[in-house]
Length: 213
Ligand code: GRF
Image (tube, rainbow, N blue to C red; front, side, top):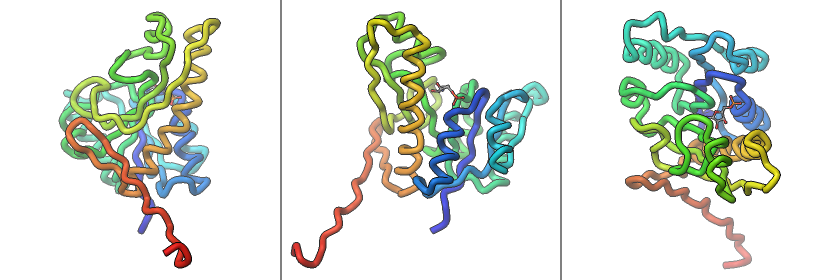
């Protein structure tokens, strides 16, 4: 079986993209980043992709008459590169029906809080301001809402008394870089099953030696 072809959409620094590319290069996931697309010409994510020889391009939302037209252009790029799973990694736009219909249950996102708590922007700071004792991060499938789709994996990060929003964000980011490749790995292995709002991960059959039977 060939490697799962990923299309990564990113608007900024691209550290999650880097974690995904690193995991792929290390052979930890049966996947490869086929293309990186940004809505921000200056996104460092584009530079990271180019350094790895991954095709990377800026698609300017302002040059389209509507969100649908913009998304059609993105879908065209993703299809051109044979993308099978779309990974949003710091992509600062709400996904619309054109993309959702083109990639049903095939778009993932990472959010820096334990959803459904603290959706939207600055999840780490929202959690820190609220005073929760635990926060974390969530990888989920994308639906038409904002950070509302079925949850694939979460990681818990304790909030320390001397944390600032920034120090908490750093520890959450470390966990993002662990769980995003792991979610992709499970998808690539065909182990994710969506039932309503729930996502189940099928376990791999344990190896049984002849002797133990
Ligand atoms: C991450 O905190 C991610 O959870 C959120 O946006 C940020 C992107 O960071 N969706 P990076 O561009 O991957 O470094």
